Amino acid sequence: MADLPIAAVTRIAKASGAERVGSDAAELLVSLTETYIGKVAQEANKLAAHAGRKTIKAEDVEMAISGI
Image (tube, rainbow, N blue to C red; front, side):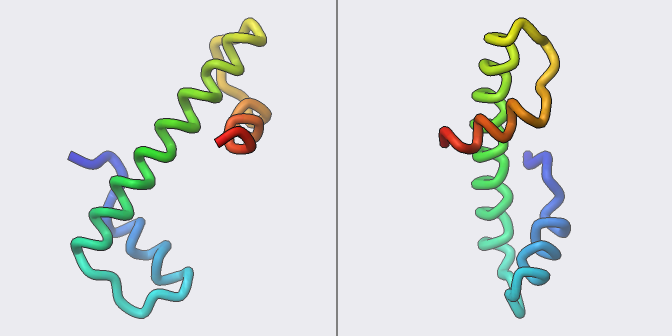
């Protein structure tokens, strides 16, 4: 089961120019987005741990996305 709400992802797609979003496309967008967030969070967590912190900061996320 997805953690991100499909309706929110559909709204984002529409705000980005999509006129209509099929349910299969919305589900795939949710799945891919959750995978991407998971990868970014894992990398950001490594960076925070390397800095001796348990808390992920914005700088960790920024560095993580530059490496993905």
